[in-house]
Image (cartoon, rainbow, N blue to C red; front, side, top):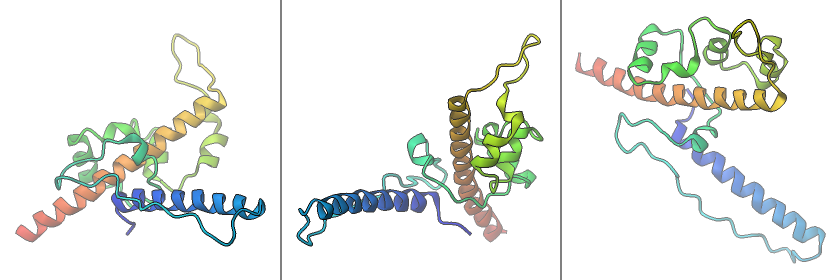
Length: 168
């Protein structure tokens, strides 16, 4: 089981603040300005909380910070739940090459960028557009955000499923 997206986002922001301060401290030390004094770390509040048990995170920049997943896209009931919440479409067409990157979240950006089938858009009018490296980076960002949306949905699905099983 992975940390909730709320916790993952918060932890990522804490780590970013720590890196920022460490860089300042390093610069100060190398310039003789540090005097052993460390930069004060800002207190990082959670930028997003689930306000209602069924609410989904809509903040794309925050979703892009999620990096751990344990959702099961092979679970047909989960697929139905995602479809009912308007989230399943992020994974593309079932069985497509993009679907693979959502159903197997161990697939990395290295695999994505080296996959020649990702280099070209769908054929339209007998022609296929070749994606640039920047296009591929944008497509990978879409995968990352889509995975986070699925993970978010999985958390709600898991909690609502548990509630249903407790009632039975």
